[in-house]
Length: 528
Image: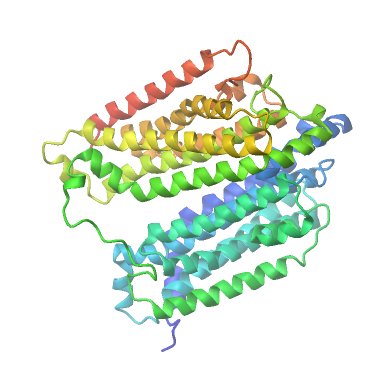
């Protein structure tokens, strides 16, 4: 019997069970690419509108953080490469991470892997199956996105180069996730390790692009390698070779680690719990303890983002000094103290969306604990449902709010060192007034989990929609009534004379309403 005996039957069953989780990712990334081609001629029908687009993007470093450099915005393929390139690569990598960890380490935590191991199966079979699934999903994504985008009008070779970067990103982070699955003490820890690596790579790539650093610095991050393919403007396929070598090397390392670790354990030993449970004797202490690791990780990450983005103040100031006239703030922000502060406001909007992900994650864990049958024993005693939910809601609201204030403080301190004209108090104040917009998205998720968990994905939909409307909405000249759906649209710029606080009051009221819906629904619905 070889170390991979049983891969074929296990792969067949695993694909059948996981295809509903994989398909949405392929559809999402394919739609991101195809919609760019479809919308381009409609939104930018003439040369003048396309030239205006190129000018706007060329003077907005905040967009380079997310989408990378815009090489050619005078064609549909060039616009697609900019809009879908970096985001598609990120989502493809995230898809691969979740697939690999879910089908390898998560099965050990649930006990399913032990049942499978009792049959005829090699030591490396489960890991090989999970990695094969990640690779197949990545290749399928590349093929489907290529065919669909070409079908709606995308160029054959330009789209092929773009789709190849999606596949390469998935292959690379299939290996990263496989290594993380061997390191983490459980599936949650493995996901945290892999997603952290992906986040660092994405932020590093964004920093290099936004600061217009020397060209060689792009090779310091794996996502920078894929950027060198330059779909629709260069179609250089050779940078895919180091990406494939990276994927192969990480796969080998993961296999070696898998052969050396104990079943059900990670290379990193889990932290021991307290000898006595007094510190978590209340539901408030329990909620804090369950989310303590996430709180520490997210707060540190948000502080790091504040520092990284703060360092951009100097380079961005130089860029804006060369041509500030074309700078167009996103999300309706205007009339601020100047282009540099407008840039910092945009950065805080991006951080707010990331902080909302943190809060929604905590809210969705309430339902995860429920389906694991850990909530019903608590409610079987004298604990009231509203009290249990309040403990988790407090952490979900307070954690991101604290993270925004920390990120704003660090951002202001670092930016003020690079540009003395930036007032730290103004940046902190802007971060504070952005918090209610974050609470709207968290409260939306809380309303879904509390009232009807079957629609809990509405929480993530709210985050995605807010990102799309805030970052991309103004570029597509959407109507004001549509852009106003984003809660970040109603965050005032505090440096404007006679600031209108009406919008902030409205989104605060909406957050309170969603929260009330969540509590009323949780009190009335059945608990699993």
